[in-house]
Image (cartoon, rainbow, N blue to C red; front, side):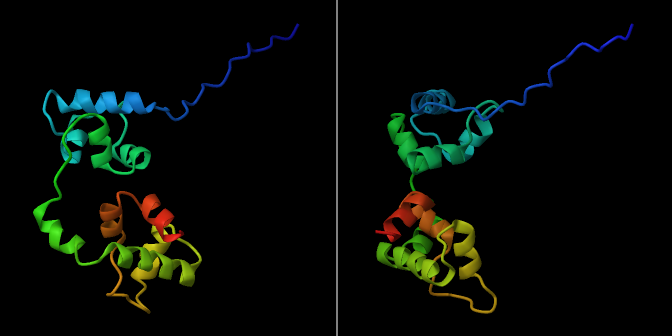
Length: 149
């Protein structure tokens, strides 16, 4: 008589947690701890391992400030040291830079844009960094949407 080992199912790997917009906004309110504003850095310091990440808010709502606004919190003012850097280019120039990248590389991904912009063989000092575009336009996806219209 042969003994067969009992079938033990493999452990299930947890899938990604999917949050509703309301759940995300409730987390912001909870982590604001009664304060009217919640900066991204403070959020990251207060959030637990089970809480959603700041980039998720930016992807879902288009920007950190838009998420704060929807949660009924005050928006975060742009840091003074960034004001000059991010006002060097007009919105039209930001969009034109993405269009130039698309023409040359065939792509509008952030990685393709930065590789094109910083190409040592052809550096472009007249093109804004992706971080500037993301900040000014609210998100990279919004900037690329506008550049394709």
